[in-house]
Length: 219
Image 1 (spheres, one colour):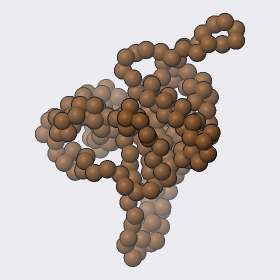
Image 2 (cartoon, rainbow, N blue to C red; image 1 turned 60 degrees about the horizontal axis):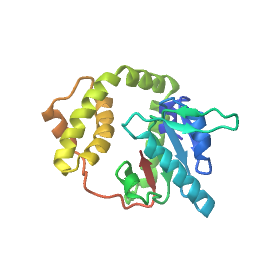
Image 3 (tube, one colour; image 1 turned 45 degrees about the vertical axis):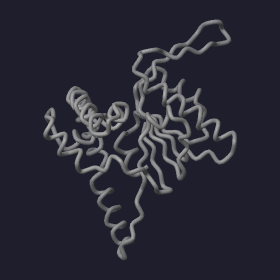
């Protein structure tokens, strides 16, 4: 709520883990806006089922078939939704249990800072966040992202192909390629070539699984 939410602004669905999947779908309708789920642990059985339902919506949103979701109503008319949103789940434990979800989601773990001056470093980081992420700066970041959509889409195709070749897994390439193409475009304005993509990818360890208890899941 101090970094991601300000950057995304108000054009998001920002919900707690106890929210229902139906409520999220009805809020989205056919808008391709980001969804953030806070406290997505699921401590009780009811909460676990709710998170499972939201994960199903996230899985449906990642479908490239172009198919819609249809819901019946008591008035005898169906409602259709075209889900095309990216989901971010913030939780202490990983709630991904199905292979279909595992291959569509990327888990980011926060590494423990073991430096002796970690408290001072955190204070410095907090000051930097507050000084940089002003309302005007965040608005400019969003405007630039929209302007860069054509370039991001081109970069995503190249990133996906190269990562798929590196991992010998095109599905993983599609998942990670989209995320890293967005990351790359944060600091670059042009369409990337193969050499630039390979150099950028080498700065990441794509094979190391998340081990921390503090988890951020991106769909």
